[in-house]
Length: 310
Image (cartoon, rainbow, N blue to C red):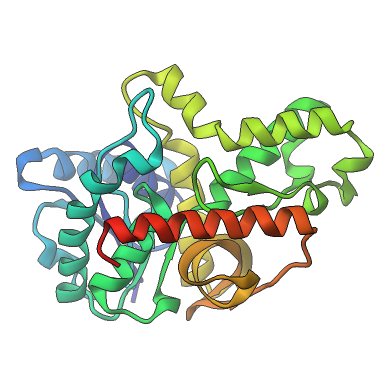
């Protein structure tokens, strides 16, 4: 029997998640959006089904606005919410998207109570915490796509700077999925070589800065929306690691209980993702400066949580 993944939100990110999942032939997919979108999710789902004969996938893709269709989903990927516009920070979206995520989370708890939730909507870390509270699920079953996206942006910029294949780069970005994120050059390599041996300090700093504003850079270029290909692909990496129990070590927004000196907050840290969701959190040895930045990021989000009543 095929596994089942529900994707909430059939916009650019959600539709891209559905497309990447279908191309992997990994699971049956339900694409959900609001009734006001009328036939849009069904139309995108049918379009994806019709690409199957060429792309060699035969999974089911269904589009609907009925949350009852997510019944028995193994994973629910939440992409719904307002996208950033030029000049907006992820945190500017807080109150606007909190109501949307509350409604989505209530429906997930009602119709797919055994599922895992992967949050993609912004502000990512805050919405992940919000979804955890509303669903009442265990923390290992609610986590967010944060550092994976930021790390692949970091990897891309390093590869562009050095003129090498992105496949030979590895990077680590911790902290919140926002302006307080913490790129960690000491855990960033090219074919195992630390970038500190390949690049001068000023270029490393410039790449770190560009990584922090990587999403905003795309928002400015698009003018009418935000990134979707890379965020969607990063989310699919998480889905695959859970469904296939691959035990991938990925930087995700996970609930901390004292790691890195932080507790009762969702923040980006390296996690083992497997069949049980977040199965382990690795506590890296960080420099004093990087640890301070990570704690500052976590405490910033704890302050924002107060605006949600937590």
